[in-house]
Image (cartoon, rainbow, N blue to C red; front, side):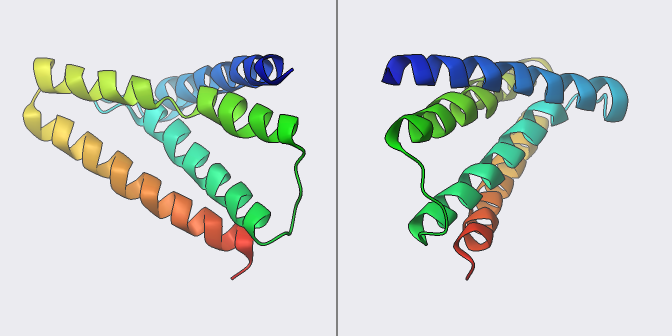
Length: 125
């Protein structure tokens, strides 16, 4: 049952990631920096922080299979960290090391900041 929960969540997360990437790239920011991937990663980091904080504070409860569905499947399929790695490598190989470093720095700092903020919001402290 765990594998099914993860697979279903992952499928939904991947579709949501593609939708975010499409909307950001086509309708908002069409630049060499992959802002669609960044939007998915940062919003996924915020979501996982909110949920982890709320769980830690006892503000919400999720049965085991729902935790697997949400954390491993849905958010794992959505946050696109593997895509981030490839995007950064391609920037370094095809455009400039500076853009690759900027992309990595924005993802890491923004992701950690979003998890921290989300945890605080979820925990209520």
